[in-house]
Amino acid sequence: MILKKYFNKKFYLNSSIVFVIFFLDRITKKIVIDLFQGNFGQEIYLSKYININLIWNQGIAFGLMTSNDVIFYNILTTIIVLITLLVFWMMLKSENSERYGFLIIFAGSLGNIYDRLYYNAVPDFIDLHVENFHWFIFNVADIFITIGVILLIFKEFSIKKK
Image 1 (cartoon, helix red, strand yellow):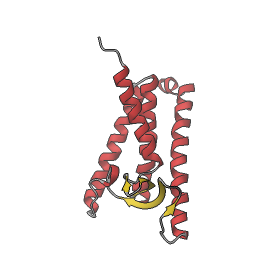
Image 2: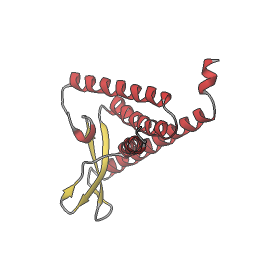
Image 3: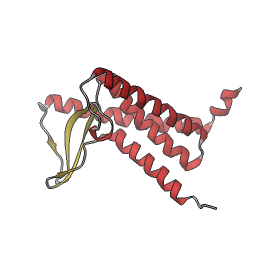
Image 4: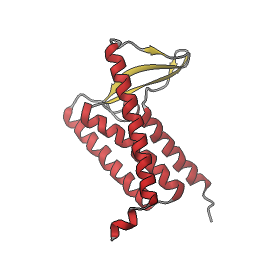
């Protein structure tokens, strides 16, 4: 009967959000990977400020800690999985907007973990730029992780301190 506490309307809503975010991430990555295979790896120009440019990120956010060492990659992946499990636990313990912040982070993290396990790298492809200044290349999962973090930061700053 303990499980009945978790299997309610909120559970199905939360599960749907995770599924939709994971699906959006998967489908966009699949489309871009297929485009680059058919386009011989050429960068795809979309507008003055955004290109599609597929890179394979073996590090953490923004390509930090990238290494060709398999042991280091596996340790890094294990740490990322453990952090994702911690985010999941925090999601279960939180409520309201805080829960949705953790939920969105969790969903995005699942998308990137899937890639780490399936491809041994995360495909990043959204290239925002202004003239010659390019931001770090990222993907849809990264967008949701960032939105979740911003929600949590906003929530923390909006709490009235006693």
